[in-house]
Image (cartoon, rainbow, N blue to C red; front, side, top):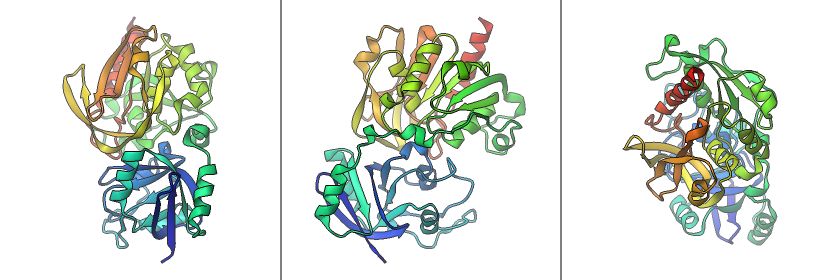
Length: 381
């Protein structure tokens, strides 16, 4: 067992035991309150640039398998837990968490008081951190972490986005072998959707393919001419990591296509749509991350339990004064930040949370059907 040091930029120091890979990494330390779904969390590209702390005390008990990943590899910088389960019990598991992190060169740390660490982040806010299995000098590690780049200063979207446009799952084999909430081939609409990949999760693609005949995926820096050149019936703005203001190409795209074609955005896509219409975003103190976030649906007058993972939020004052006919549709019940809005006169809507889940509840999957209906209504006008 090798010691690992976690040093935060405010000088707080934690010592634990390393698992997975070894070395030294820097990233923004955040916490996730999900009780399960660690494999989906690790492979969610929205965690690029971050060190994730799991608040649930025992992690790794059901191992890792090839089917539950949300991208080709883990994108987080480091993984911190209270206790690692060395003997997973699950008939679907193909390997343990320790081996999986080793294979993907991700540093893990166990034995840290994750409760104290989480409370510290809640009080002080998300901040830069370093994990090291190489250096034991606290002051040297503190010096290094204070010189490391902030999350806002990194171009993380281009790091995780596809480099080439492609059609996802043209024959439906990946989507329709997956539990589909009652969908079948007969339920698929005849429409084509263009997807902007800012760090998209695989389950979003699955659900889009269950609702649309064709899913065309484009790199994050694609312009309106390239996207509209495939003659889509709707445009989808995906989730992704980092500061939305850095996604200049996405903001420009929204301004050029808004009102011409229906738009649906999730998470980072929600923020990009807001910036595209002239609203502003701001960074939350410690963000929202977990599969148990309560959201009030104002239009449906009910409560949805949602999966969330974001550091930024849309500023309500600027959304109301941006000059567009906007309507707030969803509100986070923990802090009353905006969790969804629509641009009524321009056929666009978005949510801050993850209706595709993985991990998390399925309360919000109706939004994909809402997107199809918006496209259908637009085609009939």
